[in-house]
Length: 86
Length: 169
Length: 101
Image (cartoon, rainbow over all chains, first blue to last red; front, top):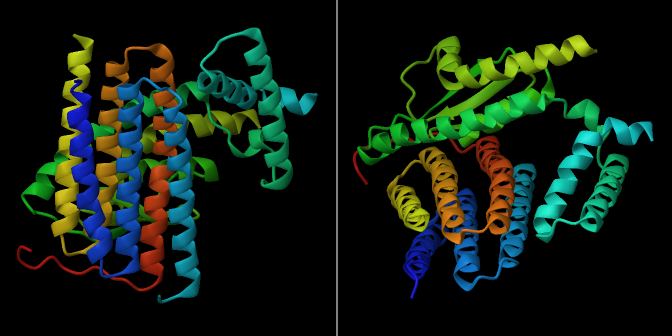
């Protein structure tokens, strides 16, 4: 059993803690911020998992996930900015 | 052909990324990387950008390399500083505005992104040379003082790249 | 030896992230949370990915992780700036941090 398993457990706990911000966030920008945090945590988790399982193609998944999360948060922020109050 | 030679740096960069992502170094892979890089540059140039790549993204590669090393160092130095402030809850969040001396649009964007990457400051708005920054430790309202403290080292590193490019025109 | 250094780096990075997420959950002012999130994203991600690079012990995986790190360093600040700009344009102003909460 590698030490990386404990890192995965810690990342899961941190991910659930960031989800709390999405649930309680009073405004939509707080929720976007929480989504940003969750994206970063998932990218870290996929990178750790790739080394743990010795499957290097999982890092490609992490790259695509990170770029998609960036496009999603930029697009939602722009959309709200143009629409005014939500 | 001339346009491919102009963009040789970008094609090389894309080929390197292609080889790294495929995890195999062979002549066939390098050739594939160059062809895919040229195709990607051609289509983005045609459909997305208003000008050529090498005219918009002009920066000295060596200066950029040294700059990124300084950036990582600066992230850690400022990070520990901000962490102490955050744990002891001695934060004083405020918005400061200042002007930068850089003129090239790409360099200003680079500077603004570096300010956001450094813990403790987030760029909020950029219009021309004017930057609006959220600062977690705002102990001064003075524009030049705040500008010197936030972006001093970055601006000093980026200025030579811009002036040397200006002379090439 | 290098592997142990990698595990230590991963632990330090996770500690950075934990401090950041604790602060994001318990600060009241939105702009303070924005600034803290940018810190978590950069410091935690850089440290954890360098640790994973050292643990993996192979050049191809380490270079791939470097590409991932560079992409994330380029896109992360843009997303943070987008969110802060959107909030400011829509009229969300700074709330003073009164007391401890």
